[in-house]
Length: 183
Ligand SMILES: NC(=O)c1ccc[n+]([C@@H]2O[C@H](COP(=O)([O-])OP(=O)(O)OC[C@H]3O[C@@H](n4cnc5c(N)ncnc54)[C@H](OP(=O)(O)O)[C@@H]3O)[C@@H](O)[C@H]2O)c1
Image (tube, rainbow, N blue to C red; front, side, top):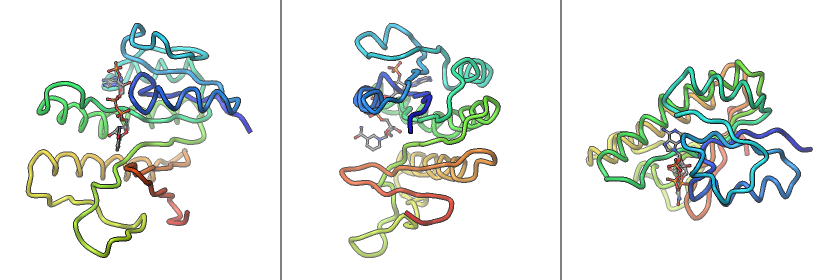
């Protein structure tokens, strides 16, 4: 089955690799970008423009793309470290909220978002399940900001009222979280 996919973060490391994989499977991929020139060299079906932190712009952009599936691959870790952490935390909290609201308003069915496998608390054995808690009480303030933002992203995506939410915790391997708690 193929779908109309809206990919937020299509110009990033993961996004650029993901676009050709989705299109090779027949999906129609629209990129949500904040600056269209950044998508040069990425073969897309369409582009819509919005800053992910601007709720109104995201809503209008997602509405025009009419996606069935929204994929969230946003982060801002390429710039100066402190600014990048704060911006990325906002993308995971406010940006996620804007994408969910826009996706629901546009009648999308599913949202797939990116989390972090190594954001889990340093507890338990070497093999963790998708229920492993995140390191919310991390002593490093920057890491605590990150893990709390990731936790909010997961909570919002898995708790979306009118979307099926899927969270992928990435590292070298990944775990899939579903609201049912099953794989
Ligand atoms: N790469 C990894 O090894 C890895 C590992 C674990 C988890 N992750 C997670 O995977 C996700 C994607 O990571 P990545 O490495 O692909 O990140 P990346 O290369 O930094 O790409 C981030 C994407 O987000 C976009 N973006 C940033 N701020 C935006 C804004 N305000 N409005 C709209 N778009 C904005 C960027 O657009 P511009 O091109 O305009 O900057 C870019 O397309 C993140 O959630 C990250 O934490 C990555």
